[in-house]
Length: 97
Image 1: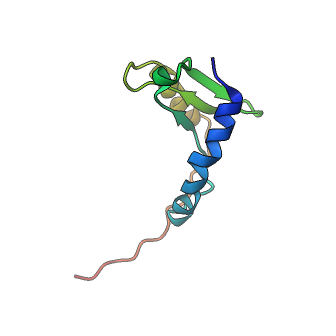
Image 2: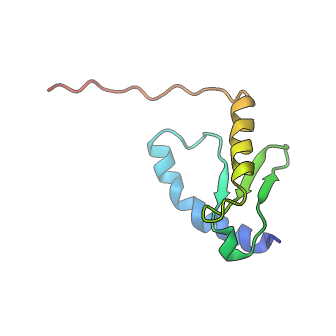
């Protein structure tokens, strides 16, 4: 069973510090899939949750036991099939040796 209040409280603490790094690598607006690991230690059931638009937004897994990994693979495949627009990679500068 997932505790929605505990998950909601943890999300900003975990994700917000990543925003500057994502902006630095031009990925701040890239589609995201939150993966919650160690569900075996937290007593959370494996599975995937969808957002209000029907897209998978969170997947709950245990790397130790393998629980939820099939759902994670399915979520990644679904995101790849969704035809999300490809973003151009930032221009790189040539290095002189």
